[in-house]
Length: 258
Image (cartoon, rainbow, N blue to C red; front, side):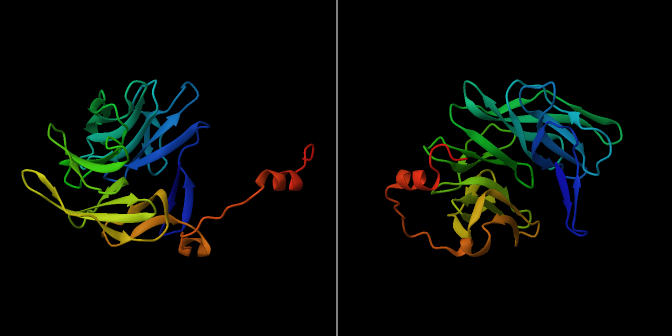
């Protein structure tokens, strides 16, 4: 894991273990970063966290034989939403509770299941007020974005209408963003006793690589990983057919040539 400091244009390494570290999620106060890691004694990824300033060692939060990836912290900092691959139910959404504080120390509790249907349920994200959890599921036959009340129980509301992944809540207005193909979509919503969502609209038609965007706190800008150069402007309106492909492959790379 690395931390990029925008103001000073510096990139600092955060974790030093030779195991693979991925799927970072900052705590609401910015002091720590949760991530998944498969350390030397593990067969698969569990949840860890570490101070964002690099002091101290990484601390293990969960023990699991199934891959786990953190995605979102509750605004209170007391709950971490993550996804876990279950051999029977595919990807599920779980909640890890934490008790304590920075002064007395933190203690992770036992994870509880939030969703474990027979479909893929991933990418859970808490709303800014902590009352709702947006996520992605393929229960309709394709991936769509849904919202459920937290901690539940309650029904669900479908936000996307033509496919959607990677939901992200605006912190400045009542809007929920997500990706649909290479477009960033946005849907306005209102809350009372229930969740009400309006028809989504295209927020940005640019070519965004899947899952690589984040919304600025002002709700007006996003950081994205975008196709380089003119590739982002290419209009995808044709198919190129290459005939005799393997003949050409044998010509440029004949057998025995390395």
